Length: 241
Image (cartoon, rainbow, N blue to C red; front, side):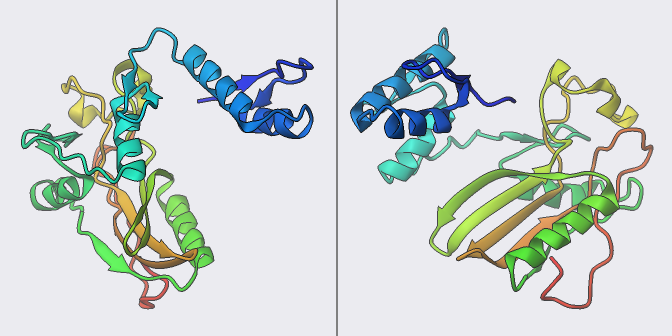
């Protein structure tokens, strides 16, 4: 999705990406922070015009429940508990629902590993540096010909947690190219927005401390069997996830 751009309301230069626009206004036209904040709200309201808004108790307005939840967690320390019937993750093979991607991976390892002889087991490992982790994930993407994309990145008590997911796990309905749909599951009325392949990494001061992954792909276009997205495990535990 392309980033939002806007022209400078003073000199009409641009369009700039919003962060660059706000810097331009502060350092070229000497706008005060309050005035820049007013423009931010105006641009945000224009961007989400027609969408229903939700307001926090502190007065901040968001245009998605997820945005409001993240704000409350970060700014107010509120932990939002989902109801007992909240199951946002769906297995693309049997449509059973789960709470997390980890639960989906365990389910696939137990119920679907015979389809193509795949192993969906999760493994753990450590990396001595961020560079070695980046080199490893690059090698996995080249081996499997399927990339990972960072879905979330949040601070926790042990550092920062990063979640990477399969790039084929996205979208719903017509948003997904029909060529990316496996024939095995063509009768499903759901396009596969979830996949058991994921990488969860904990980092401290830009050093990758530990990680957990399940990189067996349940969906991949033009394949009759389940995709083996793993690759062999390296004997060196410091360089293998």
